[in-house]
Structure formats: C-alpha cells, structure tokens
Length: 168
Image (cartoon, rainbow, N blue to C red; front, side):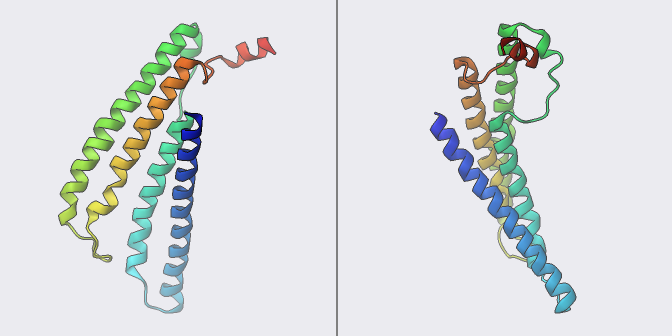
C-alpha cells in the first residue's frame, strides 16, 4: 500500500508540476503576443484559467493524501489515543463522503451537462475541463481510505508533540 501511495503521489506531482509549467509558458506567450506582437492570444488566457483549476485540484488531492489540510488540533489533542483515533477516522470518513458525493457524483453531473457548451476561444466542450472534479474526487476517496487504513494499522502516528517529546 505504501508503494501504491508513492506511485500515486509521483503521478500527481508530475501532473500538477506540468500544469504549472504549461501555465507559466502560456502566460509568457500571452504577454509576448499582447505587448510585442500587438495581437493578444485569447486561447492561451482561457487555457491558463482551466489549467489553474486542474493544478489546484490535483494539489488538493496531494495534500489530502499527506493529511496536510489545515486543522485545529487543540481539541483533538485533549482526547486519549482512542478518542483521537476515532475523531481522526471520523474526519477522514467525512472527507471521503464529501469527495464521493460532491466531487465525484456532482462532478460527473456537471461535466456531462457542460459537454454541449463550447469554450469561447478553444472550441472544446467545457465539460472536458470539468472532468477534473470527479478525477480529483476519486483521488481524494482513494487517499482518505488509505489514510484510514494507515491510522487503524498505526502507520500514521496520532501522538501529540508532547507525547513524542516524553518518549525521546
């Protein structure tokens, strides 16, 4: 399972990184065509906007896999280890259900509906760009399930910094 997570992380690193590099290149192209050629490229500006959404959602999936989203641990750290484990599993299940319902199900619905609407400059169905929602949602579901397995098996430590300090 650790190997699967590693491969998934690497794929997302590449996808998010390539999206970012293409965005930078297209933005430079947009500046060049606007100010040097005096004929702005409209398609590149539109594509950068869509790539930004893809990059952000792939990055959010990576953060979900690392359990790095913002949280306020002050309440959870007051629980014992079993209470902490139950609370963290509940939080992962909540994220899993949200991802499955809103991102996967809702994303499929909106992407399907948007397949008949074309982008203004690219001439591509907008639904193509919306498919990142169910893809990212599926990745979030996979990551939250992997996190739950790792929490239950003890691979992910739930000890507070004070508890770790006392052990050292």
